[in-house]
Amino acid sequence: MGAVLYFCSHKTYNMLEKLEVYIDLAIEFAPKLLSAILMLVIGFYIIGKIVKFVGNKLASSNFDESLAPFLTSMLSVILKVLLLFSVAEMVGIKTTSFVAILAAAGFAIGMALQGSLGNFASGVLILLFRPFKVGDLIEVTGDKGWVQTIQIFNTHIKTVTNQNVIIPNSKITSDTIINHSTNGTIRADMFFAIPYEEQFDKVESAILSEIQSISNVLSDPAPSVGIEAFDSHNIKVGLFVHSKPEDYWQVFYDCQLAIKKALGKNNIKMAYSEGIELGPIGQN
Image (cartoon, rainbow, N blue to C red; front, side, top):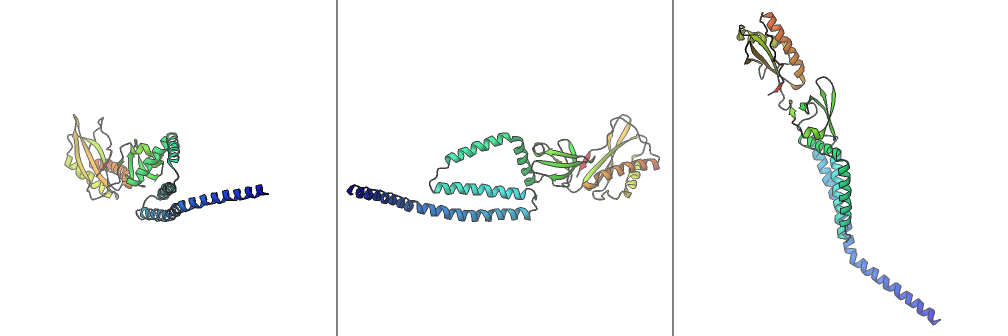
């Protein structure tokens, strides 16, 4: 009987001793735990406000609608992960091993998706710095056309021959971009040759008179005709007109026809010489 009482009392003492230890631990960690919970609540509240503020700023600045939700979501995730790591450090949890694991996983994923991540980063840069926008006439990677859509990984342009070209964004940011729509007007250059015996003043007057009927040719800057070069047999003459970027090709072909009509109506001879090229797109 005495042995049983001793056993019970000893067990009770051990339980009380463990309870005392737990109470001491609770008292020791309670402030840290409460502080961590408080920081977590306040942190999530502040993060929500920051993400909402950034989202409103992107919306008010006419930022690309396809990228804005992704960027705000990514910002929210990054801030919340940083908050959780900070809270874990507050309660004494060592996050060094977790950081190492995440870094290794991030490196492996980055190597596997190297090309896609490059296109993604380039897409973000294009949408942030806006070297061109939807509707602009651009030349890039050897293709020339109007921008249809700017996506995260690639950009779609419609060429002058009505083809849809999909260009990876990383190729765009690593290449020279010519944006013909930046200044609001674009110059069309057209060249032809006339014999030396023809009077340039007559040629100039005839062509400028004929192109007055072309509605999409802008009067400011005014159209001009000039002598581009002299070769061994002929004079190379250029017609330079301005239009809106979206009217460029219609103006180009209308002016080509106007040159033919003007020379024919005024009995002006056109020389045929190798090396005379149609002018490239010009910009002013």
